[in-house]
Length: 173
Image (cartoon, rainbow, N blue to C red):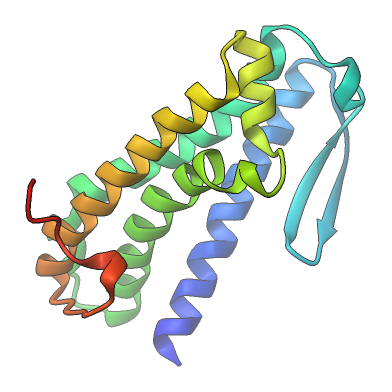
């Protein structure tokens, strides 16, 4: 139960940071309309309809939140030994999940999930004039790298052992 509670707390913090950053950047560009909670999570609603969006501001509105959450993830990754050494088991578990969630969620959001729904990748591609599949490819590479960092550097520090095929070190790296 403690693992699930700390994972849930971390996901809530992640969503608040991610969507909150979308909202703050949208406010800077006068594009914030409202905030909505859906069954799948929170969402910032913008003033300009999707089909009318153009310009770099959409790359910033869509992309800064992803960069921020990744930066939080990399910061926690750098501090992984200190986090693993925390005396309080709740803080240690939240730190573990911080690394896991903040390194993996946005790369999945920008690489795999766009095949199901548009999400942030559309704004990034439109705003910066980049092919969406290039954006997806770049973030699939980031996902691949971050997964390997977790498997090789985070799991050992936290004593995690798993047989799950998605979390085995790749032998050729």
